[in-house]
Length: 123
Image (tube, rainbow, N blue to C red; front, side, top):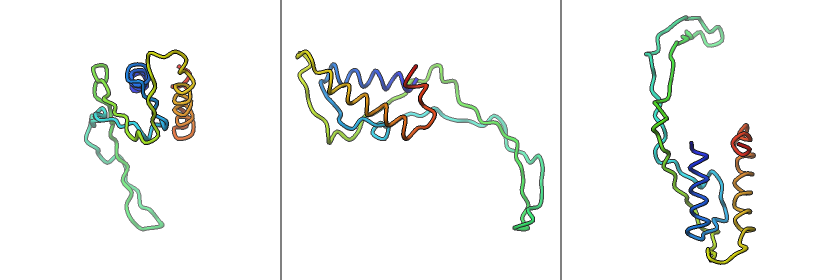
């Protein structure tokens, strides 16, 4: 859901507004309304052991955290840090390289700062 919204936002920025971000990374995207996480049960002690190193009791709790229904949730994303951005003429043909560089920088950001996210890029 978030990846799709990011793609739609970037397409609108490139194709409608004619803006090349110049530093398109996940650090420059803010999520304004993260889905809430609720606990389905109150943590209750299931076992208690004595930590021999600190002489403190260790309590293991049994709680289950779940996300709220995300089928109706639509992420609200905001792009920030346009310090390296440039404007292009959206009516002029052949401005694909600048857009491609933006997307390549985003792909590299996913690969380097979000391990295991390769499936998001290839999906």
